[in-house]
Length: 327
Ligand code: PMV
Image 1 (cartoon, rainbow, N blue to C red):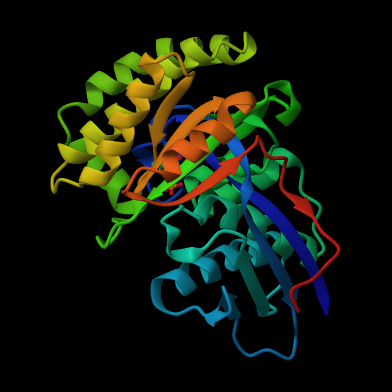
Image 2 (cartoon, rainbow, N blue to C red):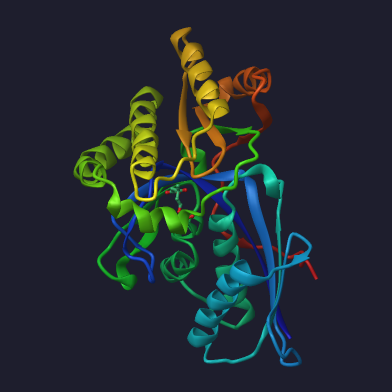
């Protein structure tokens, strides 16, 4: 039995991935830029075992079924095809952040699965090859393979659509203070969001603005200029949500609580605090700030009545093998 365990960070996009040019291969319409999150990680152990008749997938201590299981099995099939094996696998996966918190876990999950499964199958893929593989499980997972600050090059085909590191985690002591806003609404999966994006009349406007915004974000990152970064990341988060809301059918990730957190953070900024928001496809507000302000911002965020939970993240490292196995 060949067994391997990998750990990967989730990531928060400064420039978002929203919409595919090829949905099956998860080739995106645009480049995206993100930061890995050191306190939102998935650990996954994979073992290929000739005694198994079927793949056994345990996520957060529970057997996975239906669509989540099928997505993991499809990813194992990609690894089996690469390794020229047919052996079934046992997979155990665990997030270090609470499941119902609404933090998207598919990026860290498919990055960790890609590394653990290829190693367990006896393959040693390069960072680029791993990123290409992870992308096919969940687009944003390709950005969780390299460490720190990362750009996903959209490319034109599978072989040239992967993420590259822009700067290591130590380059800039940024923080992502995730404010989880309590919600009872069911989350619309991002796969459905990507599929609906081309029906929005605003998608073309967004895509036309992106080359200049990507260049702006790269410049702000390399200059460690939070105010410059902040303007672009707020604009980009809002645009993703405008596209989602104006898609057919419309997708609303917004809740009154999220708007109150955004609004409150804007008043802190007006008072002189360096804080900028971004949003993912869930009931969270991500407050981007420098390390020196993170504790104060987290304490203020906890005092907002809509806040369910606050998680402070520093820039996280690359997906990596770890010696402790989950089984
Ligand atoms: O990788 P997916 O299919 O879960 O898409 C991610 C979509 C966003 O989180 C909203 C944006 C992004 O670039 O991470």
